[in-house]
Image (cartoon, rainbow, N blue to C red; front, top):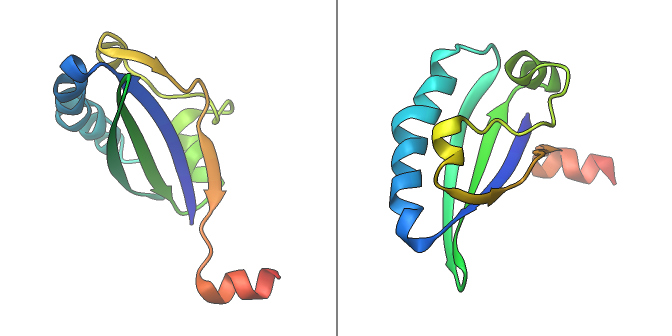
Length: 109
């Protein structure tokens, strides 16, 4: 499994609005694409002194599935215009990590 991790930041005033856009439009739009190998998404939220940070962790079976979702430039962020309107800044690229079970991690060492 591959996890695609991305972060975006917003003001405290826009945090609830961004969450509403993310869960009401962005995530349903991704799920409507019916990308083979897409396994779901987690949303994390963390307040800090300058505003609110959001992190999304998408799960895919393989890197080829992420390429089917995002195209050849698969590290590029997927940030729809509605989200851009309320985010202060965001990662321009997403990070991709191979998820290892305890057994796989032990075998890798």
